[in-house]
Image 1 (cartoon, rainbow, N blue to C red):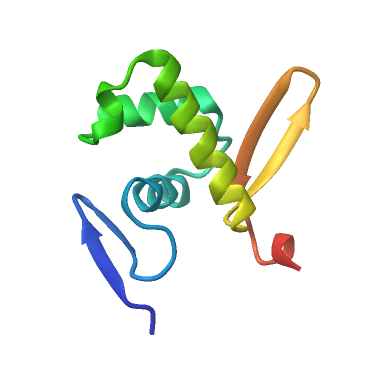
Image 2 (cartoon, rainbow, N blue to C red):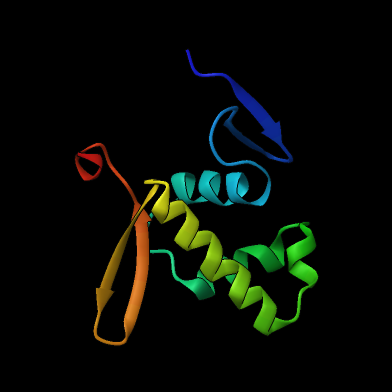
Length: 96
């Protein structure tokens, strides 16, 4: 059985990312799809987190770093095409 904690309106696993990253991962799991830096920035602007008040340049930096970290930890898969980079939720097949 996986233990969970409530973070605002989101329920996230007790182990793994915490704070802002846990909320982002919970939303990515719930909504699915392609996640770009802009999509994460838009999420942070709608969410009552300290990051939402950051200047746009800083918020972009935060969003890029959060996506990179979740990818490094194996939660997301990076997709790159000419002039475009986005992430999707990793599946069990992606983690082999």
